[in-house]
Image (cartoon, rainbow, N blue to C red; front, side, top):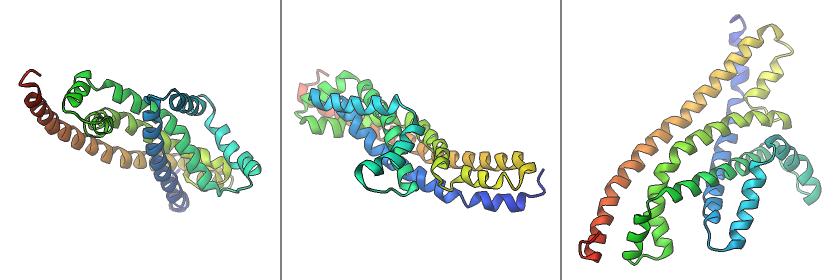
Length: 236
C-alpha cells in the first residue's frame, strides 16, 4: 500500500499552497462579511436589516457548488469580467461562510447581558462606543468557538474548488488517481492527513485567542463595574 508513498506524497503536497491560500483568503473575507452582516442584522434601519437578511438567507439557503458555478461561469458573462479560478473560489467561500458567520455575530451580541448595555448607557457612552468598547469585546469570547468550527468547515469546502480546476489538495489527488488506481486508498489517506493537519493549524491559534479574549474580558468587566458604581453612587 505504501510502495508509492514517495511519489504520491510530494505530488499531493503541491496542492497544499492552493488550499492554504483559498482557506486564508476565504477566512479573511468571512470575518469581514460576518461582522458587517451580523451588525447589519441588528441595525436600527429596516432597510439595512432587510438587505442583510436577503444576503444571509440567500447564501445559506442555496448550494455552495451552484454558487461557485454561478460566480465563476455565469457572472463573467453578465458583467464581462473574467475571474481566475482561485479568486472565484475565495469569493464564494467568503460569501457563503460569511452568511453563516453573520448569525454567529448576531447571536453572540444578543447573548451579552442586558446589564452591560445599561451600564454603558449609564457611563454616557455613545452607541458606537457601547458596541466597540463594551459589547463586542464580550461577544467575541462567545463567537470564537463557533468561528473555529466555521473556519474548519471552510477549509474542507476548499475541495469544491476541484470543480473549477484549482489544483488544491483534492484536485491533485484526482489527477493522480487514473495513473495510480491501485493506490487510491493511499491517495485518500494522504489527503485526509493534510486536511487534518491544516485543521489543527486553524484550531490551535483559535484556542489561544479564546484564552486571551477571556482573560481580557475578565479584567475589563470589573473595571467597568467599578466605573459604573461611581456614576450610580454604588447602586449597581
